[in-house]
Each structure stands twice: as structure tokens, then as C-alpha cells.
Image 1 (cartoon, rainbow, N blue to C red):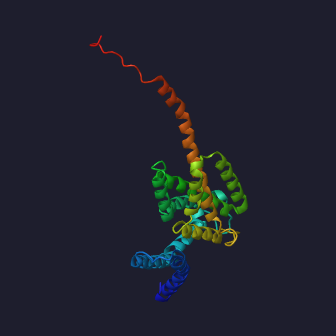
Image 2 (cartoon, rainbow, N blue to C red):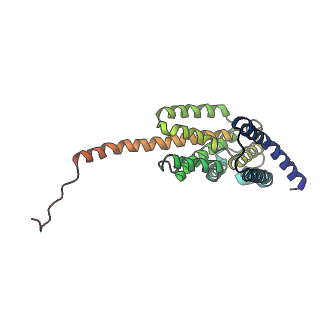
Image 3 (cartoon, rainbow, N blue to C red):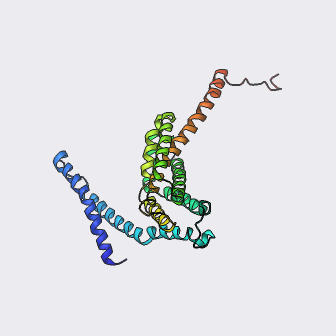
Length: 273
């Protein structure tokens, strides 16, 4: 990547952060009317944010976007599918695409910084009731299912609204039965999964599939995978909470009966007799 490209990315990133700086400065000086504490530390932090965003955006162009596109091209090539160039493969032959989509969705979600931050806060606030690693695994499973189903939609060419509408109907039904303590967290996990790591690879994968599969449009069929990645984690988190609540209800009567009965009497030993 040339120095001119890096300079352009730096300029765009700086312009993107200007509204945040102006907003914070306005509220600090006009509304709160107090000097900003630890100004040097904040300035240094913003400098690190700019540097990190520049390097991240450069990495997207150099690695993540090309990687997703190349993997899609290789997994859909006639040689890999075992068909001739003139033959239209059946959807079953794209099984490796579904598996790869699910695995890449799981792996990127586990590494998603936004999900790590939310899961750590959830464990702290809940007092350990919600485990950070358990939440990340449940969300990653939901993303894996969603991406696998999304790649199936691209391969088959079925309409996106049908999947999304059906999915949100399921979410609304789950919301009426899931524990209320988990609802807000479940809906938040749908948003934090689609962040810095997941979006580039998943978007590149969808566009690559739509560009290489005959009869698909990159604009119509290439996008939409992110919607699946946002939708299915809500289902898995609420489903996990429902399973936990059901187990707790099953164990409660046995525990209450044992408590009413009291401890088992101590049998006398041979010496005591």
C-alpha cells in the first residue's frame, strides 16, 4: 500500500472523528462549564484511536476483503465442486460454502472486540450469573447458524425478506417466553456481533459468492449476510436463557421437598448400639 493511500485513509479517519471531538468540547465548555480532566491523556488516547483506525482500514483493504473474496471464488469454482464449467451445480454441492460460512462466523464473533467488552460488563453487572465466555460462545453459535443460512440463501437465490420476517417472528415469540432479565442483553448481542472483525469478512464473503455463482447479482444477493449475523444471536441467547430457566424450575421442587423433609437421620453405628 502506497503512502498516498495511507495519507488518504488518515485524512478520512480524522474527518470522521472531528464531530465527536466538537461535541465533547461543546458539552464540556458550554454545558458542564468545567475544564476537561487529564487533557493530555485524552489527546494521546485520540491519537492512538486515529492510528489504530488507519491501520485497521488499511488491513481491510490488504487482507480481509481480498481473503473473503478469494475464499468465495475457490469454494465455488467448478474444479472444487466437481462439475464442468457449463454445468449449473445443485445447491447440495455447495456444502463447503455453508460449513465455511458457519465456521468463519463463529471464529470472527469469538474475536469480536465489541462482544468481548459487552460480555465482560454483563458478567460484572450480573455478579457472575452471566458468564463472559458462555455468552460469547452462545452468540458465536447464533452467528454461525445465521451465516450458514445466509450463504444457503445466496446459493439458492431465495428472497431475503422471507428469512428476515420469519426470523423476527421467532424472536418476538421467544421474547414473550424468555426471562425478562435476559431480553435487553439478547437484543444488544445482535448489534455488537456486527462490528470491526465480523463485518469485513462476512461482507466480502457474500459479495464474492454472489459474483461467482451464476445468476446472482452482487447488489441484490451479495448483501444481507450481516442481517443474519444480527438476527440469530438474539435467538440463541434467549433460547439458552429459556433452557436454563426450565432446568431451574425442574430442580426447584426437588430442592424444596428435600428442605421440608430435612436432613436424613444419622444411623447409629455398631459401637453406639
